[in-house]
Length: 492
Ligand code: ADP
Image (cartoon, rainbow, N blue to C red; front, side, top):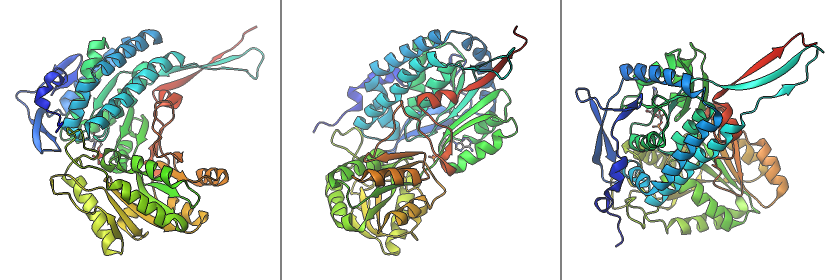
């Protein structure tokens, strides 16, 4: 058996920093409280970290503010060269970063590696885009006037991130912020702070000056979140997480009128039309639905399949799902790791029980495997209906519910019948259907014959209660910049 043994791979310990990081120093709180980080595959404690609170948050804001003054005055090229060094170090340390991620998140090692590559792509891309934050020259309406715009960094930025992509959700925010000239305070999820501190350690090695990146860690995010939102010095909040918490952060930031970016929950429709290529639709559904054990905000949550292809598609999907191996992320054969915690597991079970009570049928899966713990079998449910809880709520687990539909108008109505609007997917060979449905879907992103759409070069984000703003691409850079308009008068 080619099981990966952590003890044979102790080099990751160089990057193992169970601390916060403020003003260029690693911070432990030996006399303060600490909290435990667990490996969700084994339920064993892997580290203790300091429980930071308001005092550390104030100190981080002050340090970031002092650092901002110098960082914004560097040339874009100077900042971008430091980002490039960081990017190189991340790739050089990909094996160790992946081990840390699998340890604290549980995802299979191959998925952790893919995430580190994805995470590094944001540093790569923004290390180039940072040099191109151009303003405009605008023809004036008076002969003696000249009008131009310039872009300037918004200021100290607070970045709050989730556990499902412990590295990429950080670099997707930090890289454009730093490239723009902002300093940052990161508050990673309480389940996965070690990927964050490892990345910051590499940023420190790359030479990013003290105070430019700060890290606050805690099991209780509320006091930190409140201070970050209410403190006037913080000018930007960028958050990825639940809609519920996003709404709290927007409210708490209102008094100081901060710039906000919110990447919140989803309830993605995946629509398979009668004319779809079944092999492509199945392959892409697997990638969309089961990546990260179904724990992504763009995972297909409601799969709508047209009558004429329902049987063929559901059988082909179940056949492939049967090949997935559930297990510890460090076993090379594992395709599906555990869920992140008990509340994640309970939610999947609640959605399944509710669906079955209302008439759904289990085609495959539908229970925990013999491994127990936080594992759940990848599942396909048929004969699913709109009155089931999983139509409204994001399952965030490896459960694929297959709804039936008859025609285009019916499916557009069903797909849009949600408060969320992050990602949607369509499978069809008909160009007309692809265009029409893409335009009608009230979602920020649409995959056409593609189940994966995240990339550093495209604007990622949602509409309705799925969020505000975009990450990645030129739009991702603008989230960390203000536009200033300069009007020159009396030019003769
Ligand atoms: P999830 O349900 O995926 O865990 P959350 O929205 O609860 O998503 O968490 C995402 C991030 O938001 C985490 O870093 C978490 O610590 C943080 N968080 C949760 N509640 C608050 C809050 N009230 N204020 C600030 N941050 C919060």
